[in-house]
Image (cartoon, rainbow, N blue to C red; front, top):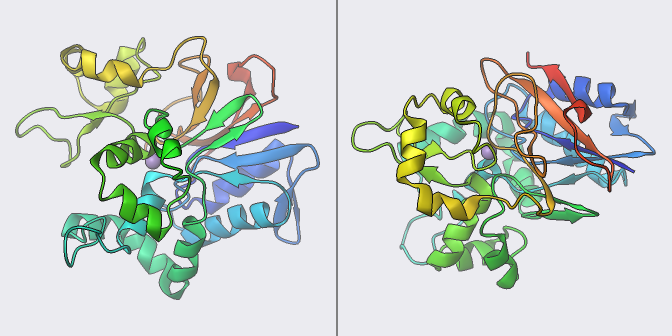
Length: 295
Ligand SMILES: [Mn+2]
């Protein structure tokens, strides 16, 4: 069996279909399948692109047709769900506040789903937070925090689990670590579009790449300053093989750390939709990436 770990789709239905065809899947009555391949999506199927519901339909079709496809929860699906669950402590609020900024972020997704929103939310709430498959782990952003969630027997984001997570700071930290990864602040007045900067925990030896990707020219200085805190997010060089998305890297898909492989190269300006094809037991190599341009 070959596992194709597919990067963040972000509503880009056309590149997704091109990628699946390039990988060797055939479209049978609208469902992409292959007898010897299994697709695993790292989440963030929604947000950004022009065909969000259609992208979800493709993924859902592959999962339900017994094609054995898998998907894991990501920050955009989690945020959308959290905006529809009442906060367990703060009266009248939702787990994710419906602030102007948060509403603007989901506006396009809500518009595209229209009346189909409830069905989509119900489907997202069934997604696992991570997958352990043969010799690999698949999750959205960073493995740190998974153990605390597992210990609390939280493996998906239904309403009960949302209420537990949002009333327990430790679980909330784990949730954030797993779905959006570690971030650091640039300091007063220097927030990039109002957001903190993502720490590329899997590319810690490629500081120049990271600086370009994040657009933070003094990235290295910030890493040094936050070094002690950020260390806990690193993955041991002899640790288990893991795949994740989230980081919208740019350029030709490549491996930054042999056993911690980012499959999301969907950078808006210089990106592509990528998948890494893994055969259990085989060592990893850049040549196992397949990519198609974004349109
Ligand atoms: Mn993401």
